[in-house]
Length: 159
Image 1 (cartoon, rainbow, N blue to C red):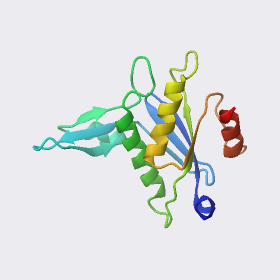
Image 2: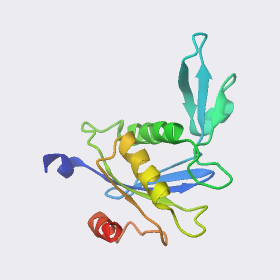
Image 3: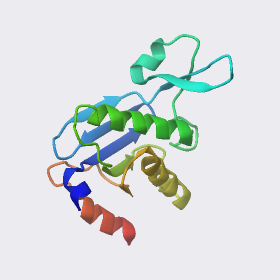
Image 4: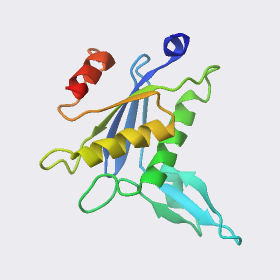
């Protein structure tokens, strides 16, 4: 209960070439290219060196877009999870409390025929692994932050 009092709700919209996160309670918007630059050191250990637009400017790094694949929107689960962790950290970096957010993740491309159960679960696990306390995978028209109701979306998803 106490944790939920300080928690925010994040509305995450995902396209192949953009990820947009809106903090529902404040209206704050974070929008970035979903790119992650990864370098391998001389011991073979991979590390993230840049994310977003900064990833395009890195040298000697592999740049991965976890949401770019010919058939699916989610192409690289681990890199996508790290990207969301970074975004959560960026959003909460100036806040004294960093509780796990409630997340509505809204894939907006490659939806022919709707999402499969596997895709829904992958997006849900992606957000949970990044630090969300609860996740709704939403399909439909873009949501308005003025009428945003996480509990109603959760009930609708559970049907």
